[in-house]
Length: 229
Image 1: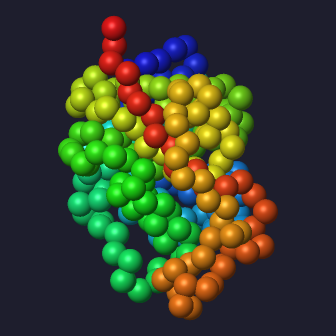
Image 2: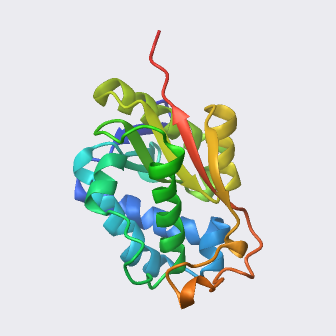
């Protein structure tokens, strides 16, 4: 595991650490993600409806990491990921199912389905695409480059231990987009402005639930994990 005098990186392997990581994500995400803020997500709502279920769903895959601040032993950064093959197998997208209580869930699911069936021109297989669902750094540590370190480390780890060939990220955060596109040579696939997105599962496909949104677009990004030389 990567570490230095101030920070230590470690695999998330148990529910105690997972719970602390989920709490950090739920607290930070609504504060610093424009789409989450637009949706008026509270930390409690984010934890219960999204973060904790998502993290528990991939915990056994042991592909998620945390960073601790050594002087305080506090978890200050987290990255959550799993196998995209398993995600699609366990939660298949069905256009005919009723609309979600949260339109953003349908937006991200729709974009993921479009990537799998249209943008990615290969058959999805186990241990092929690492699906990075979220990367968060506590605000007062955000200038330390921890998100970039976690992103690089998780991709190297997934490639070297399980043979993953790609990583896939969906983001509406400009800093996260910069890391994966500019620093890690990711390729932007589908880009959608939530303000113009039509909620196809609701109101005969004519609803625009995010029409007043003025933040960053949602971007699908694919990163090729080059083999070590």
